[in-house]
Length: 123
Image (tube, rainbow, N blue to C red; front, side):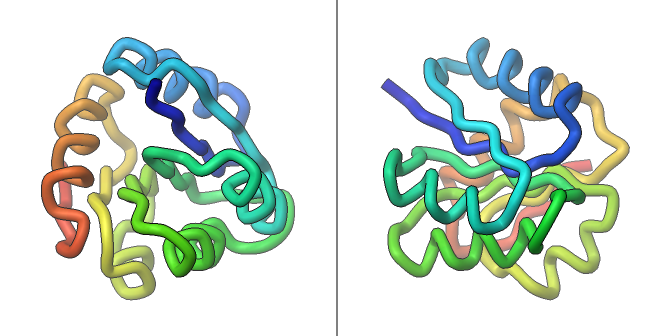
């Protein structure tokens, strides 16, 4: 069983990410809209992968990922339109630059799992 945590305010993007991840073998998901919810949900149900978008209702998505990764080693995939800002703040995981093709998500997931200690940009 593979579980993903999606930290993204936009439900349409979150739903599409869930669908694509299920095609890649993930079978459970948590979708949160705030930094505090992300950390709390990850504590209750540790994810195998974290996907972080650009926008939250409150808090900061990158900071949420950083806080979660301080407690456990989890690959992080940034789905963002501002990869420069993200790369400066979060050194682990892969970055999927936006706007992006959803078809590139499997490649980005592989990069996040294969090189969790390096930044990788998928164009």
